[in-house]
Image 1: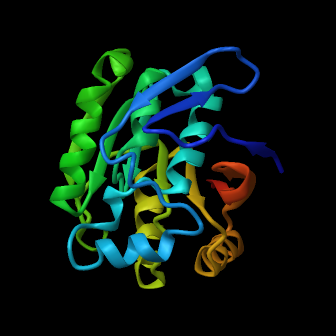
Image 2 (image 1 turned 45 degrees about the horizontal axis):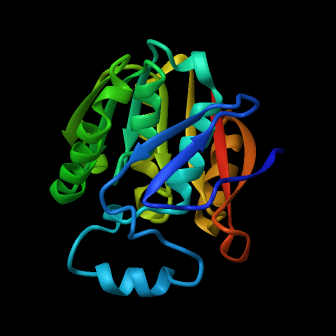
Length: 225
């Protein structure tokens, strides 16, 4: 299990590839709505019944973006499906590595912000391509196969787990990987246990996101058949 400290969170998010003295800068709108451990309840209260939670930049999104960039050339020409894309950081990073990315969210507001962020970083993702789709997991209609299915902090509602498992079963390529970032919520651990019992293999990388005083541990689960 890796334990890697990430760079501090700024309006410009700088992601460092492991072992390579080179940085990638991704410019995001709504990056100032970053969710720290200390302000999570305030952010949730502010956003409740106003806009989707996905418009905030969550620690899991940053951890997943770092995990993606660490995979480097493995993403070139890969088909990537991002679920609950929100601000879109992990998918933008994947596209910058040459992946063909489909970013999805069920909220039009969140997907519009995701698209704006993609456009702000178009020159960085020129090697790949990003497609945007409104999609609800409970009425899923995509029958495509993807090399990677990725999602940041999407395991918070157990009632949605059956729909997610159906997507993983139907849309993951035979040798593909599911990458799920989560701050060790109990319901995510229960899902991983259930999937492992169902024959999936689970690997875990542990990341620490934020400044030292506000660091948030995040697990990135790599799930494969």
